[in-house]
Length: 362
Image 1 (cartoon, rainbow, N blue to C red):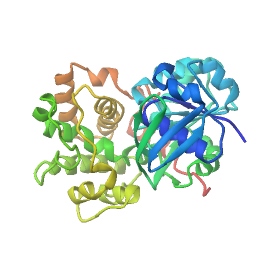
Image 2 (tube, rainbow, N blue to C red):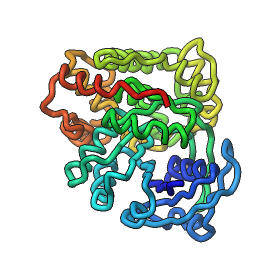
Image 3 (cartoon, rainbow, N blue to C red):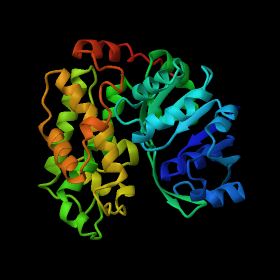
């Protein structure tokens, strides 16, 4: 059985590590800051609570990409998407065509960005596939993870249709609840967090800036402010259709994730168990806000423009949060050039995505 390397020691990375170890697989953890997981390194085990209780063996903790790549054919990248360029550069010298890279979560067309970065670093031909974050999880000390929820359904896709065909059986073996997406756009836009995080933050800007305690998904929305999310979802849906995909309504997505009411988006969010206790970020300079804007909203706006579509609310979110954070997201985020699509028009991008729709049943 192949050893698996997990890259990233945040909540998602630790949850993936615990999940893989709980199924009997040999897993190694690679992180740029091993001190954050010193307890795991000392004991050779990770402690998990919540939806994945237990203690599970960890073969190694290291900060050396070469060491992990030499021992692990499969690499699960569970780090923030805005670090993909750096991670690809660090691992590229140590990868061969036998390696498989799995992204958690890829956001919009993350596997295309990662594959393009590997190719630019002299490593074309590495299989790169992606799915969404599958665990709602938080670090728990330097030796554990609190798993608040496990998504019971999600999609996967890849930078190349051959990679999807080759890696589909492996992904379904590791994470049996995954299904193949029609293409990268459907996979990337079937992402409730990308729809919700930034608009909810804007609707509660004052409370976040004052550092007030706020249950993000429960107290952060009302009948009026949920209209923002519904408009963002509408813009996501229009862009998906322009590129050959049709998105499930977000209440149905949340129901497939966690089981919840489907009478409307507000009811769905308030009845999804993992969301009931999650508090708001303490600042707008927060990982999931930067990630969703840079790695989903920015490429979505660019893909929309190539298709002749406008995204007024998405564009406003980018403008406002870019202004408040001082971050020029359209320059620093996931541009079409980073995907290798900078010179392509709508029809050419759609054709490439169309070629990625056929993942056979696994």
